[in-house]
Image (cartoon, rainbow, N blue to C red; front, side):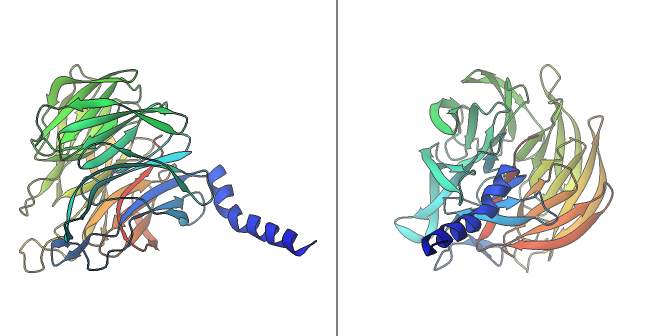
Amino acid sequence: MTRPGWRLLLAACAAAPFAVSAARAELAVSANDGKAILIDGVTTVPPSPKPDYVAVIDLAGSLPRVIGEVKVPTSVVGPPQSVAIAPDESFALVTGAMKIDPADATKTVPDDKLTVIDLKASPPVVLQTLEAGKGAAGVSINKTGTLALVANRSEGTISVFAISGRTLSPAGKVDLGNDKSGPSHAVFTPNGKMALVTRDGDNKISVLAIDGSKVEYSKRDVSAGLRPYGIDITPKGDVAVVANIGMGGGDADTISVIDVAATPPRVIETVTVGQTPEGLKLSPDGKHVAVTVMNGSNKPKASPFFNDFGLLRIFRLEEARLSPVADAKVGHWCQGTAWNRAGTLVLVQCMVENEIAAFRFDGSRLEPMAPIKLDASPAGIRTAEP
């Protein structure tokens, strides 16, 4: 074989691990914020910020591993559901709620970026960069892969995008009637006819009505707890679980169960989980809920509410009721959590440690595994919805 032929063969082999993994993959996408660090309880822009970037993680093997990276705007501000993956894992959406202030490099200001990433490319590449709304945070894709919603925390709106293949087109905005409402995340029901939107600015969960690409605020609001933030819904679409992050005053906060099948939807259960339930995710079979609890790990060390660790808590969801199953200590200022398809692996993003902790779960116990090390602080994570 000629030398150019060898070079082509070697290049193909180098590219193969991502291409093969993506083809058969079970992927998670982690959005990592390089412009936010924690200094004794204060979120700070470092003097020389690292680039924001996305890490594509293969969950199909015996150990989760990073198989691709791409630089895109991300942010720790907002719930860690700032990533969404298409049902066929062909692309991902990532929001960037904040950017460095052009007038003052020590501060951040609201941003509106929504990035579309090609997960089939080797390495992954940016397909589109769009404008959502100020403070673009939680993002979701419907089950048919035809519509996306972005919660804009800094303007009280929901951006709607129509999807054709892997191309997004703006399809309007939903005004929630209060620019201080702090919409954090929007989640579709499996049939795509409804969405629930958490509003941590005015302590509401709003019901959106959906008909094709037409999305309207139904004017129905649900009351769960103080500052509803992250939210997820079961594969059956019968109930949703919402994290109420509270006021950050050291009090024990809660998660609530919403009966989505009821007319109209309503809260039917609330349980205490500890200080600041930042991340929340249902297992693919809908039988367990993983919650990342800050537990005061993001507070100044002199605070009476400081603890030198966060918590991963697993609850069983049965007949719309929650019961505790297992707890594990994690790092500091931890954000999102994700499951593998089998419900036997749980990932937890820890900002201070710049790593994703991994745990095996057998239905009753959590067993720690080797963490995934990253070059910036992991702030948002998602897998394709079941």
